[in-house]
Length: 395
Image (cartoon, rainbow, N blue to C red; front, side, top):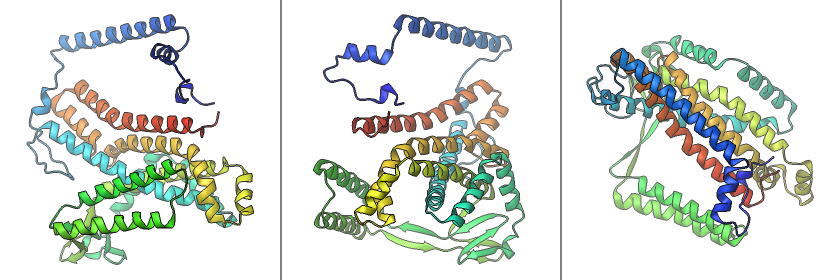
């Protein structure tokens, strides 16, 4: 059943009527229930504050400006021991976001690929993917993380680093990969233009109510190539490949991933890719067989039927579940504290131990994760309402 809040409002509905519909039936009972819950929370907060005052603990966020006398092994911004606790928490938050974004991207690519292979009609591939999904989903995530971090500890030292691919090294110090560096200018204006162009093409397609013609696609492609290329040439942007190289007792160049980050990234991606594979499979199965037969009747190949007919309909099932999986992956980055990855939970834990402000630090952690989760939830709810207006949400 579709949530009533996701359905479009009736035509000509007044604001008062909309408020009453949003509030729901039995408004008096709901108001009493909310008031009782608020009173219980206020009583609980009062008791906590009284107990803290009795033992000489005054709740305060002043500790955020105090120096944090501990190091952080990896950081996206400059940090050194003695910087404020606020900066240390920011470093942990950036590490969490780095892991969450990388994990969501890798898990999505792997999970979607496995889901499509499972539905490709090849019995051998389907059984292999089934085995992977069953093993990954029925093994505790913590156990998998311990396995991957233990595996990184068995890698050889730098001098005997493994090179599974050209200029890619695996050693006990971490993973070293080639990287593309940008020098001499800023590339973000070109990326912003490409994002704006993609949004504009999407809006034009919706307004026209038809696919773009070959000429229109050609104009969009020309703009996507010429404008960024012109900016790069005018601003003097240069691209250079940075390749890891073994020099003495160290590996220089490229980008390096610490063993803890690599273990977390692989562990989360492998675990949640199995869930995403199941989501993709269920989304494809939600499309009736008649849609496939209609595509074949039009003379379309299987890949074109999947691209043009099945996937657009399956996305209404896949997208909400996929978003929930991304949020779960983001929240499970907190398990990094178990294997030594310095994400925001580890920083909060160290801050609480050093300052004694356990309640305040936990509240900061709650606010941090709510700031991550609530915007994503709001975005997916807006997407679901948009699908409801277009009549794509099934009841």
